[in-house]
Image (tube, rainbow, N blue to C red; front, side):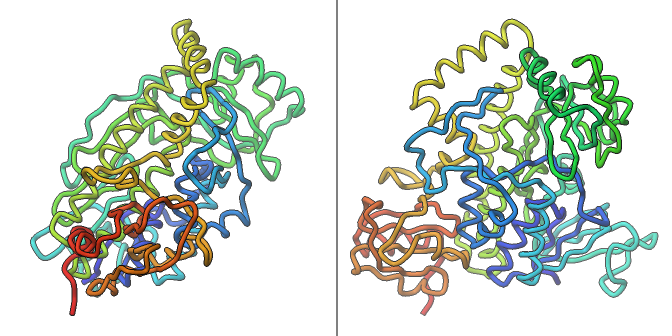
Length: 488
């Protein structure tokens, strides 16, 4: 029996596979597509995802093929300077097209021993107290693993996670509700070549964007341009890609020219629907990424939200597989991440309103823009979009409790350099504490930092602060909540 089946080989599923493999969990990723998609909906990593990659030793791989960017308060079409005193040692984003992100994460997942099977479509799902049965369309698995009726194959696993996008087969097979609002507007998005002079394109785009912020034509690499233009309406079947003629028609409608677009690399459409799964866990099956929530792409938060879902879930699911998870640990995935997803849905709804071209939207955008000239407001908005402000409710206590700790400088290196293995970590500035009984799950580092105003902090594998103090008895009382019973 497989430990965990991950359905979906996008950034969320691949990040989850990496996290699980750090703990020795057997992982099989099932991807419906035969090859990685060339579509680049996600355009990069925000500051919190940059931190995540650094915590796992992956940031250098991204920086080698990406450019840093610093745009603070990227909210509803409003761009402000990067705010001062944002609580991160990584005050920037990384411009990485989604296919590159997927390639880097897949390479890492395979390095760690993940098995990735392509051309595997999930068509059935059931579970009992011992595990999950995943049924695939014919040809989805080796014959010895089980053959269902009609030539279909099936796999057995202890747990399964649906990371299979907004139209998630796993979510539908589970019968989990997906309430929210349907799309009211739709945008065409694609990459293609253009015949028009770049200077002319820039001038036209600047003029059109004075009234239509959902319009854009930007030069990419290899002579390819990224084109976004409002669609004529909302398609009945959004799974069907638009045609190049649709792009030309809408470009002429908004810009008076189609810029001579030709030779498309890929064409797609997206709407402004906002929906969230009622539950992120049903027994031994969980949901993450777009399978758990969909929202407009405003602020570039979707890919990042999914990666951060996986970062929260991975170590908890590994603990359940390994048998040391304390009661309620796996349920805390929903408890912590569902509110985060709900807040992203809220801020993207607000941003879509601000992107409108009517007088009310224009007035709202002007008002919010003035408010964001205040440093504190800019810092709040930037922290919200980049997710560095996410704090989980761990109860009353120190101001750091529940928040993630930034990459502080230590006397001997940096904090994130100690977190590559995905274990818990006690950063002890007193030298008097111990994690005896939990040393197989928690590293004990005695070091000091001028940036940390606390005697000691206990960090979960995702970097969130689970305890602050200097009393050994208090520490021993807190360790079981996140790391289970002591051994030995």
